[in-house]
Image 1 (tube, rainbow, N blue to C red):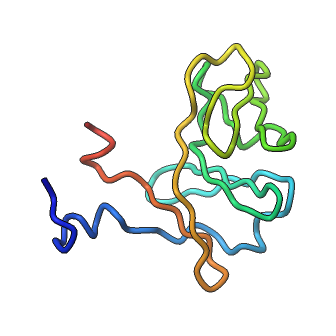
Image 2: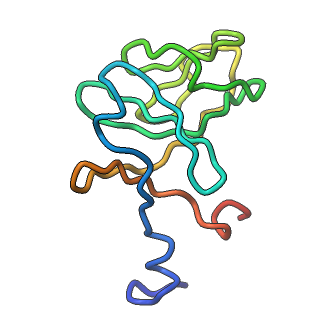
Length: 121
């Protein structure tokens, strides 16, 4: 078990700057590449959410889809996901999309990505 004060615990809790808050307009989705991953940032009701840019139905690019309220719709087959939780809200997807914790620091959108250990385990 990892202790709170240890370096490995702190590395797992690291937030990475992805964008400036003004780069994510209200009611829209934007794709950003960070550390070899494509992340979709969506702003809904003034809050920014982050999720993987991959539809779990067929690997489609979610960031190219429409943001409809708090749902993002895959442009390929119309699967929808709740950007707040990653939950499937409309078929044909059956599995949720990966979401990531977000925080804002001095106008920067910071996203906590999984560590290699978390991604493989």
